[in-house]
Every structure is written in C-alpha cells, then in structure tokens.
Length: 87
Image (cartoon, rainbow, N blue to C red):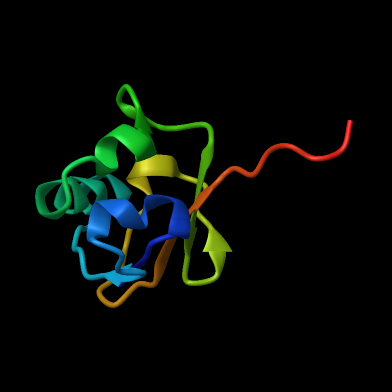
C-alpha cells in the first residue's frame, strides 16, 4: 500500500492510498508511473530519488534509496520536503 500525500493526489484522482507493487522502491515507482503517469517526475531526479522526497517503509526511513527492498504488504509513504517558515 502506498500512501499518497495531498500534494500529489491529483495524480491518483484524489485517492490517498493506492496499491502498487515492486521488490524495491525503484520497481514500486515504475508501477506507480504505469498506473498513474507523472509519478516519476515528482519522485525522481534523473535516475535517483529526488532530494526533496523521503521514503518511509513500515515506520522507518528508507536508507538505501531506490534499492530499498520491499516486502509484500509493505506500507510505503513518500514524504515531500516541507519548506518555508518565518525568516
């Protein structure tokens, strides 16, 4: 299960959760792109995970980037960076 932040729900027709599969984060993103075109553009920078995106899997930060392995039934969160504030 992939949890979609509000910022990117336009790609999923407003859905906050979608089912996608892959043995690792790269394959999961490929499946998301196949189902919901546009995901690669927001999640990747070239062939790497965008620096403005964090990945949480099962309540822990993914430290291996696109190579982070996934187990069947993994809960995946793509977290966009939050910027701004008082200066």
